[in-house]
Image (cartoon, rainbow, N blue to C red; front, side, top):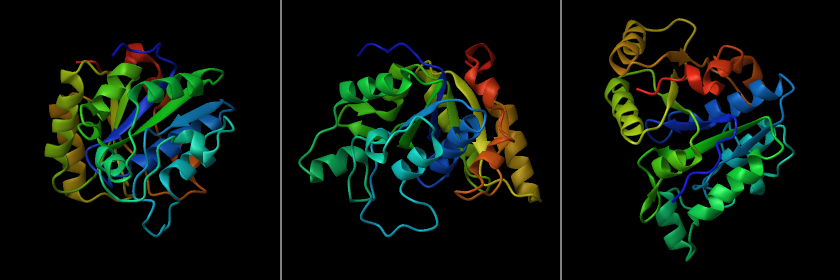
Length: 237
């Protein structure tokens, strides 16, 4: 499948499910919007809508509220499913299908007329959107710099290095890693994990502080947004 013309923006993925990539993607949207940029958001699919919402709204609603391109939550995520399962299986359970070409068109529509496009993946890079089309394939087709959300504690070194390897083996440009939530007073293991991932992974590691839907832009002020959005300053190796 051919790639699309890459807009200015980032592709946010995670080392797995529940690592904070939705919060990170929303923070990026809010941070750019606070700089008076017109930001569009895209999430290829949302699953788990049958679950009772907690502190945070569903991903597509959070992204629509944080972005500034006037999108509805349905425009942010064209595919929405109730069960909390992988997108390809959620579509199967719903007798539906996810169209990769439609996702690329949606990204093009979102990027057109916007200053930046923020795409949030589903699960990790190797999660399947269809039987033979992974989140990694979508990231490659969009040709956006990749920002990886990772946990701070035990296990994150292995998970993050594997995600970096999966990204780079497909030629993706890694803009950076974000450990989240990054505490005000990190434990020694958290400091060690951050330094180790940065050293072994060859990627800049940033911390996103604990935040809430009302303080996303403030949290994003600590992120190197302009570095991520400048391809020549991304880590491609």
